[in-house]
Length: 486
Image (cartoon, rainbow, N blue to C red; front, side):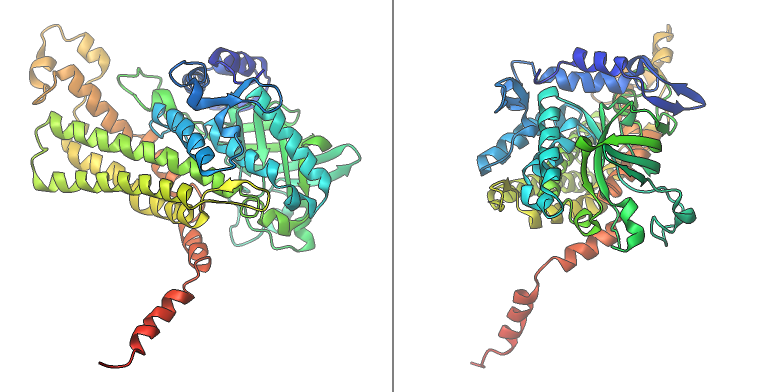
């Protein structure tokens, strides 16, 4: 089959029968037509269509090594720096199309599967059959261009306890039965972003397991079809209000639904179980397979596109209302320019300093990417919306709707809401975008999503420090102090 079109994606989505609970309603089919999911599903469909656009086909696809069909570039196993660049160029097309606002485009988890499928020695430490299964699943996902989401952590019951202790161990998703043909899973997990519009759900290790016997039922990695019997999604409320692209330019296109996943004795066949037991391997699932490196390479590519977009938006606002010459405005724009150039440099450094691992996979430099994923959520992302709010000021609060403009026969809005460079309708469109990017419910979700994308920033900082070999640098301090005098 190879790379899908948008129509093929939507047809498959409508043919599936997941169980989705949202706003008091249970949805069991035709998901791509439901108002809560329709617009985002169509946005994802455009990403699939871009794979067939002559302008982007070569960047977004390559020839499958098994069938020769064109398949997604994020399934390319990198064997050189050039391959990393090819992957980035393709991921950039999707990232720029969505301007970084889609955090679960297919290339994110495709990158994880690409690394995992090559990590044969890692899985062999448990059982070589796991390596065979993940390899076969990777090929299945690649040849069918599947869109996957994943679910990460147990529900927030008591963070001071491990999964086995929370509510008597009855909350977090766990293996309750091991059968000859597979496993049975019961409990809940969060947070399955785009769960309702995905083809597959990847249930991979996330929180650190302590390695006690009680952790065994919570130690696993598997994949399940989105409409598997017993699998249910409980969604948050939509962030948009069903308004037009004029009134909700971001929420109407990019509201990636988040959901809690409930497993009601869900059967997972053996061929989709990639790890079972072995909490020590679950804890090393991302770091020792190269999955974290390829996933973070995709994330930094996406956040670069997002930062570029905010630089463009801030610049347009400054031009529209004539504030571009003010020194404090230029200082903030310079800050955004710096962020963009630093992110570009981090990506190139990660690629240029990459190296092959023991499996021959050329991975980007993890130290560089690890610094990037610590820096962006706490230093860059919070400033993006803050700068837009500062530039826009009260302009965010006085924004008539598209219907108001359509009904303005006297032309009052056109007369009184124009800007220095834009007619009133275009000024309103621009500031509606600023509102959705900095103040709205959509903007609030984006801020929270980016801040915790990789987990608790405090724990991440601790891991960054622990992984940095500072001994040579400390030695340089004493080398200077111990130099003999002149």
